[in-house]
Image (cartoon, rainbow, N blue to C red; front, side, top):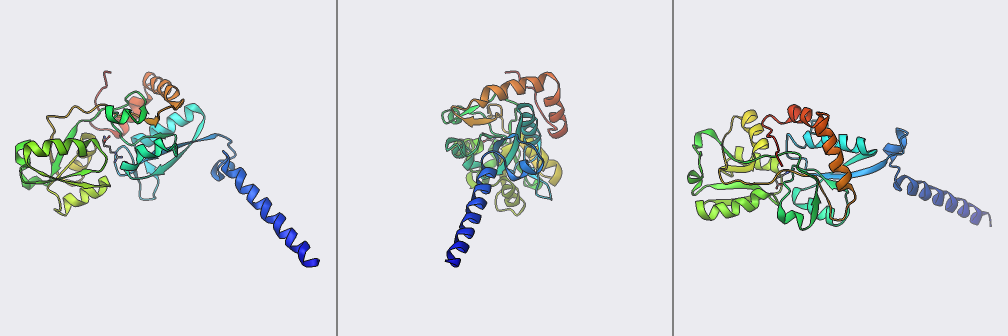
Length: 265
Ligand code: ARG
C-alpha cells in the first residue's frame, strides 16, 4: 500500500510538470515568461545566408535588413518575434503548412510564388548580378559560354539561369545555401555565381570579386510572404506604409543596403 501512495505522488508530480510545459507552449514561451511580457509570438522563417538581408553574426545572432524590419513590424503590431532559420527552398512550404506566420528572406514577390502564398507590398528592389574572380574576365553574357554558373536552389536565379543557359551555353550548378555558393566560387568549383545584386555587391567589395549586371533581369520587388489566407497581410502593409512615412524604412535602407533603389510601385 505504501508503495502505491508513492507511485501516486510520482504520478501527480509528473502530471503537474506536464501541465507546466503545456502552459509555456500555449502562447507564453519561456523567453516571454522570463522577460515578463505576455505578448503573442510572431513566427518568422528566414534563410540566414544572405547578407545584408539576413545572416548570423559570430555569436550566432540573426542580423540584417530583414531582421531589423521584422522586429519593427512585430513591435508595431504588439508581437514578440521568433525567428526560425531554414533552407531557402523550404520557406514557401513552411508557409503552406502553416508552420510559420511569415517569411522574410529577400524573397522576390513573383507571380509563380503568388499562386501559393500572399505577399506584402514590395519593400525593396534588387537586380541580378553575375560575379566571378577578377582575372577570369567574365564581363558579359557571351563570356559565360562553357562556364559553370552557380545558383541557390529555389531562387528566381535558379529559374533565370536555366533559361539563359540555353541561349548562352553555360552549365548550371545548384546549391542549397548562398554562403556555400561563394565558397564554391572561391575554391574554383564554379566559375560564376548568379545572385541578387545587393548581395553580390557586398561580396564583390568584401572579397575583391568582379561582376556584371544581368541586362535581361526584370525581377519583381522583395515582399514579406504569408500563408494565402493570412490576416496579417493588411496589418503588415499598414505598418510598412507607416514606416515609409516616418522615414524608418529609409533609415534601415541606409544602414544596410549600399545600393538600394527607390520603389515606384
Ligand atoms: N531574391 C531571390 C529570390 O527571391 C533570392 C533570395 C534568396 N534569399 C536568401 N535568404 N537566401 O528568389
